[in-house]
Length: 227
Length: 265
Image (cartoon, rainbow over the protein chains, first blue to last red):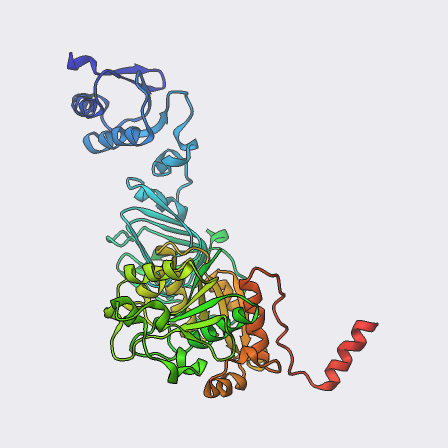
């Protein structure tokens, strides 16, 4: 019986996974993990696309199943089709799966993808003095980070507003992480284990979106356009 | 429809008590029934600014602990019959009351008064929590100094966390000459950081100190610029649309003439 709960089928452009919708999600998860374990040897480290069928999965359930695949096997998922055949990255909640976007090599921005396994937290509104935002993934702030406020993420930090407080990207040690802000004027900026403060520029400099990243053990800030 | 307004700032000495006194008096001048509560227990000042110090018999703590009736503790202002003050106790501290008790007090006062103005103590501890407990609306006072703006930012965050949305800002003690020289933050610099609506700007004015010493809020002084600013703020609290005042009043006669000619040409 358990054998039919999860069925893998080869398709010309990837794997079709048929899921039983008569069992609970927890049961399905264990059956799924078992199946992936068995089949991972066969697929090896192949680059494949996946289609789920037979059961309506919520976004978070689908993410959990994909997490199982990446944990248990060497499979590299290049593409996920949902039931209606729409590519997954077109849906906004799945920003974490960056690895299905083709990024040119040697582009600094490709490092964004290194933190794809964690999800992204969205914060709307300003982070005011005394407030602290921490997340085990990337953070997108739609608002300002005021002096005295702090945003600390294990992944990248993107601020659609101005940064005047403290930002710490890659706080668990990932030096590949980034800070991007429309206006980057932090009191202090940290990426992984490196901390810095920006030199005080003379007034009236054209305000442009900037990106802070680590190169040769140092934090660099470049206009986003130049990357 | 009565409203409880808390006047707060975080930092001390930016003009919370002065604002409370002037706003309370300004609303009373407009004919509203107003009570001002001094929530700064242990460091009361509002009674001094109002010139009512010598009339205190019972205070906020007495009311809350039931030593007197609410009516007994309310001091009627010497100028306006529809203005009352509930003074703070000087011999106790902020821990003597709880936010729940304060909330209950505000609810009771709302039955009879149009506006309840609460003068919040500096800081973000118990005194602050007490002061905002019963409030429907908050007015944040700041001066154009980085430290005051920083504290105001913190306070706005705490107000929002306590379900007091959309606080209003009063920018106090602004000096036009310094702003012009670039030595002081302008209104736009402050509102850019704090990102809340401004309800008034008050110029730095000697009359504030003089009237505080006399125990007469400067809002009653028709010749004072700061008084005019507070009258405007009172009107805005009442919901009337009054333009922000032009602070550029230090111009000499010559430039006034120039302006006149410019308008004419």
